[in-house]
Image (cartoon, rainbow, N blue to C red; front, side):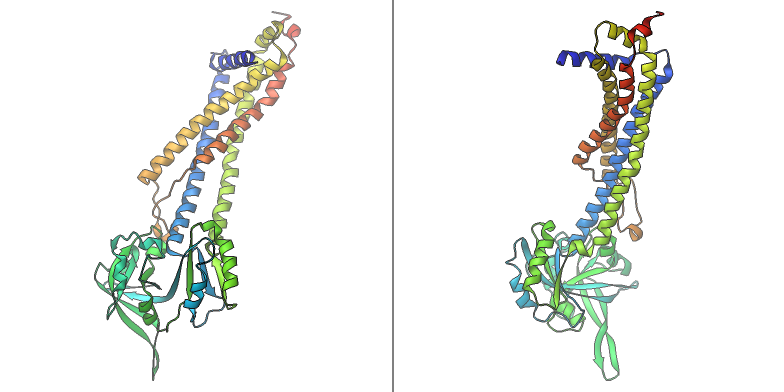
Length: 412
C-alpha cells in the first residue's frame, strides 16, 4: 500500500511540475497556490490583530481594575462596615487578595491647564492591588505613604502630560463634593504631591485616573471611613463567576459582586463577533482558491485523458487514478498553506516588533495595532485550507476515473 501511495504521489508531483502544452493550466495552478497562501496569510494576520486587541485591552483593564468587585446595588453613602465584610472574603477559593477602594470624579489643576478625571484611594500598605502600580514609569508606590498637607498621588502618564505635572510637583485636586458652609456647598481644593507616574498603554486609564492613599481619598471626597468598592484579585481570572457567586452569599443583601467579564461584556462581545465575521469574510478567499483548484484539475483531466487511459490499460486501478488527482489538490493546498503560514506569522512578528500600524490613542485607546498570533490557530487554519483544497478535488478526480481506455486510445 505504501508503494502504491508513493507511485500516485510521484505521478501527481510530475503532473504539477511538468511543462504542459496548455500554459494556462500552469498559470491557474500558480494562481491557486497564491490564492490559498493569500487566504491563509490574511486569516493569520486578521486573527492576530483580533487576539492582540482582546488580550491587550484585557491586560490593561485588569491591570487597573479588580477581577471581582463588591459594590452597592443602589449608590448611597458608601460601605461603612467594609472591614468586617472584607474579613469574610479571603477564605473563598481562588481569592488571592482583598482590598478596599474609594473612587470619585474630581478635577486636576496644574500649571498648564485643568483636566477632569477619577481619583482612587487604595491601601498604601503592602502590595498594590492594581498591577499598573507595580511597574511605575517614574517614582515609587511607597510614596503614597506620604501624608501631611500634601499627600502623595500617582498620576497617569497622559494625565500628567496634559496638565503639565512632573515628579515632585504639587497638583491641586478640586472635589465638587467639597465642604458645607453657611452659604451652601463649595468645592474643596486640596494639594497633592506627585510621587509616581504610571503608563499602562491604555489611553482611557492613563489620561484620567490617579491613585492615592485611602485616607487621602476619603479626605478629598469629604467622606468618613467608608469605601465604595471591595476588590478581589484571583489566582485564575476565569474563575471570577464562581467566586462572585460565593461572595454574594457572604455579603449583605445591599451589596452585589460583579466580575470583570460583566463589567466589560459589551467590549468582549464586540471582539468575539469581530472574530467570527473575520473568519467568515476571509474564508471567502479560500473558496475562490478552491474554485481555482477545481478548474485546474478539470482542465488537467481534459489534457491528460490519454495518459490516464494508458495508465489504466497498464493495470492502474481507478482508485489509484482518483488518488493521483486528489493528491494534486492536496499538494496545492499544502504548499499554499505553508507559504501563507510562514508569510503571515513573519509579517505579524515584524509588525508587532516595529509597531508598523500606528493608532490615535484618543480614538482607539491604544497607540498601535497589536499583533498576537497564536500557534494553535496555525493548526486549524492550515488544516482548513488543506480540507477545502481536498473537497475541490472530488469532482475532477471522479471524472478521471470515468475515462474508458478503449475509447480514449481508439484513434491513437
